[in-house]
Image (cartoon, rainbow, N blue to C red; front, side, top):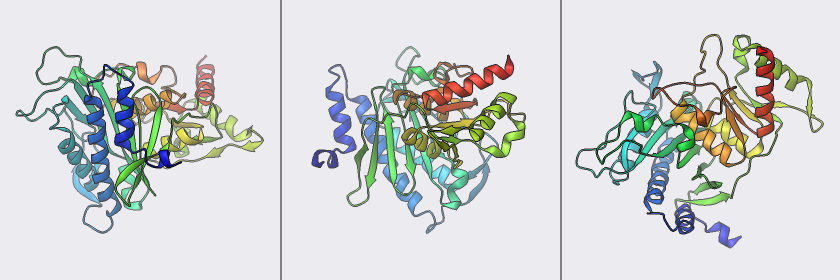
Length: 336
């Protein structure tokens, strides 16, 4: 117990690095900087009601959505925390229309950072859990100059690391480098992330389904049939439970720990759904699959989709393997 108590995020990252003799330490440095950025954003989120940082800025982002003040704060903080280490060649944020180049005086690195600075920001003023999602790739463009759009539009299976931070009743950072999923809870007493969820494995099936049922009449027939099936049947002798927070990072975090399925489908109004492939769905899918789960758009594995644009959207069904396979079955049968 004592060993676990003092397994900090930096110690865990550095001990993991020792298992890979070929490691240069760059990825470790990146993860440590992300941990620092998470602490700073968490501090600001926790005092949001006490300072003038909640509410809208009056502007719209690239998606035509009203921008929250905390969105911009988190966006700028992540850039400031990550643009000077010499590890990245390019970055991209859900809040920015185009790719983000590194300052001209900074060293250009071999990694690519994609991030959603504050997922679920529509819930900020209601004090509901929100979060940050990040995704790391190696550059594929040739040369040693600035990175390109091509570097940001890689299929999700090429990620070298991904993670998220949940700002809720406690601040939890979850990450994977492709070999296990680990969760760390921020101890406010001395400001360090401590290992709280070791080698997370998602249950093979679960009792919880998470979806915005207010869109029911816009869904395809197969999805309607699946929801009716869940409502009419039992899981281990008990009814299925519907849980929907409205922050993907919070809904998927619960799904990772308890099992079940999170769904954001396409519908009559939004054929590709509303979640972004590179900023949200790819990193979350990488985490869930690394924990033994599954993620699909209903037909294709999320991690195999080749992005065509930075802000491309995709339907997603993500969670326990058996639950995702079952919804895929209902979707296929309705089409067939």
